[in-house]
Image (cartoon, rainbow, N blue to C red; front, top):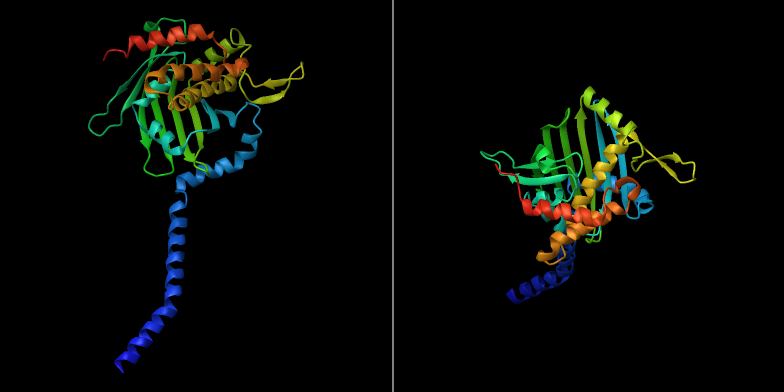
Length: 310
């Protein structure tokens, strides 16, 4: 009797074994699908990428890059959307480390000094930039822009960096740099959304418009608003053109930093400088300011000078 019972149990086990295997495989598949599901913030950003994908692939800017801008009530905002050839893990690590941001921001030709200020008592760190109106002005004439630095890298597939300054120079305020990133399928590329905005009072707005109507009358942005007399694109001008140019310059500081990460550590600084200048020169109509030798001389001097004293 006992032997017959054991044989019956073994038969049941043999019949059930394939079903147990199938159940385990289904559980593993469900777990894998759940684990690969993007986090809510990544989903939102990737949905933005999906809506822009056709425009990114057809971008006239020589790479998957789009630029937009708008006038806000009392201010301006510029936006850059881009796909970069960097794995998300490397990108997120670089963006989330506060100490890297001075290395990025100092690539901009008008940023002459930078130092990272550690937060105290639970406060976030801050980046303090010394910014001149023109690259050839002495660093002593720079205005100081101190921006609180916030990083959210709590999700494995999304990173957000916020730089915010309530005050600003020459009648401006609420300077806000925001950068978010998420991985694209395949693992080798990352989608970035960069925005730069600020508020200005009536006096600052009038002064900027006066400059754009005189010395800056030939300067343009990236948005195409029509066709020029020569048959080429007619680009946006004025305040939106201004914020588009500066947004792209700042985006290129991040792009250059990421592009140089693969170089040996001793060569990364020079590689960043080369990448930023080459990025700007890709769009000479909008971003050309100086020749390469002048840019490198200014930036090497800035690096040797070091951060401003406390």
